[in-house]
Picture (cartoon, rainbow, N blue to C red):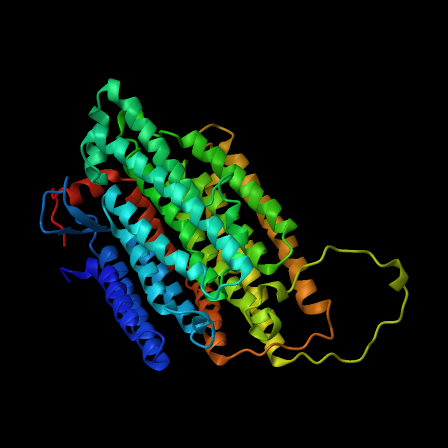
Length: 529
């Protein structure tokens, strides 16, 4: 168990290298290696989540120093409940999207499975690293893999969106590097635990320079989280990607959210002296704007992929707005919503690939949602009362779409509704920071975004399943049905047993709000396992 924490990085790294050697010549071997690696990663993630939860309040974290160097200069990996939760979520999406892509999507271009493994390596490294420089390194690994995956299958729309995505992320990476450089120049370290310890005693003449570096770094995180006005690239970009790629990309914005949560509560927590809560009001305003833009964008979207992309903006804005409250109940609801909204968006992206013309990778042929138009000529005509037979593929797809839409919109009794109740309940009861009316305003926008989501998905459902009665049912394969069914079944199972996962998430929130425990564990002041 001593090396458990490094396995989520080593497994996809090794699998990705092996898959590069196999190439595209042996599809059966390539598929077997990819699925086996994802299964191993999922088992490791489950064991890590259970281990971090069972350590108890005396240990709290698993720490791992490569080379056993001092914490201030070492490459430190840290697993607490939050990082274990994010690694588990990435492993679930990795297995589902890999299985989905086996039938046809992985063969649209070379090295799909290898790139997806390197993407998982970057994701897991970003969630587990304990210092900012290696966070930058893992960010670049996952971004490099995402560039190849986004362009997988080629096509004019995909290439145009891919180039846009690459340029934006290169600028964000430059901001990241500038921010990291300023922080290191002021503090002499990039280890997050050491930073949290040194910030309260920073000299006043250098504190403003540190704040400037933190602001630039935060801007880079907000670009990666697709926050307003920096996130208009997301709906078009994800819509252009192959369905399995877009479903995996549903977690990419959450990496930026994770970084904001980690730094905001650890480095700028209540123990940071005069730097406590730095930038919280700006972060709150950014979250509200992102939430509002995403909700309006869902109403304006004209295809299912972009509709799902705007739902990701809604989730990003909701989470950014909730972080600043630093309240255990609010944060727990937000983390639960993070998981549910990511899985819901992933299932919608997978479904979008099955709803197209015979499942082919033709972006221009995907169904376009039309605006409502009243037809007074048709009023009063007799309705056709003949029974309508629903083909099995359309029956499955429409049912899966309904469940996914209810998850994302937050309609009872599914977990999306439970997550929103968990967020709204403390917001409506207390007057929380950053200012007295903030909680009420946040609650109002969350409720409004749910209403907008219901309207948008209802329109999409009507036009996809009811408007065109002459539509030819698409061909869908069992290898594509199983992943979609699995993610929806997982969400449905959570509903009757919600106490167990939510209690884990509640303990995660409590752990995040006590940064001294993280600092003590990383610096070796308590026994680590």
